[in-house]
Image (cartoon, rainbow, N blue to C red; front, side, top):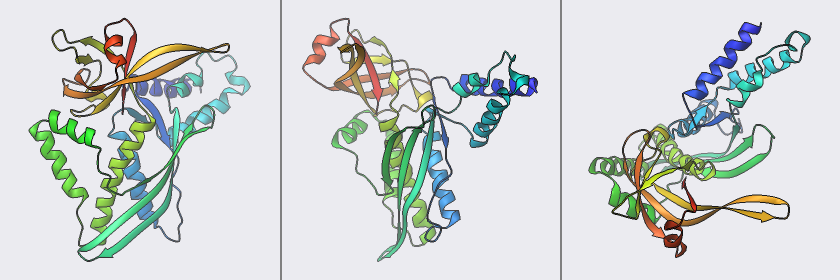
Length: 299
């Protein structure tokens, strides 16, 4: 029995080691109105949601069955035979899922239009803290096409390679297509949903990145200790924040004050990227010349 416990803990330890600094998440089975949504469509939507987190590269998706196995092992440890065990399953849980993602289908519509078919998906996504059971984020996400902001469009136009730009333009064309068949229209809706889900995960799970150094010639350029390994790409916007500590009563609170916006210029490899400041507050120059702590947040 102890051997089985050790193997299970070791498996999760390896999982965490291979996905260092990634966020552990697991998915609660999707819920929906069976009278209006088929089980096959619901399954495709769930797979699309899961895939959007997987391809973001900053998450480790923990299989639900693994979580159930861990819970069973926790219960076994409470028995007398495990009182003297040196290896705690808690070590494994701490390296498993930190958050649960709950998905509820609010609506699925297939509409016949003049040129063919269009589909629309509307979901409610909840993020639950595993340790407390608290819902820390909830949002409605649809498959509607959302135009990127001017700042995002300008950054991509300036820093993307010709190849990346062509890929993006081809994908944009696909997202706006009207299909002749309902099944194909549903596929287009799932692609749009994937894009919007990535926006949701970026907003709710920003990653803190370290600045390696600033360019000696161009004071607005810097090297980041992160790259393709967590899904960074040329043209991606970043928040530059000033990290300070503020005393509130008897508590010391860390404050992240946004003072600039940066953009990924070049992704060198899985571990390093070059970025450039494209917009800054007045305080930025003063902070940049001081020894204050600056951090980068993905968005």
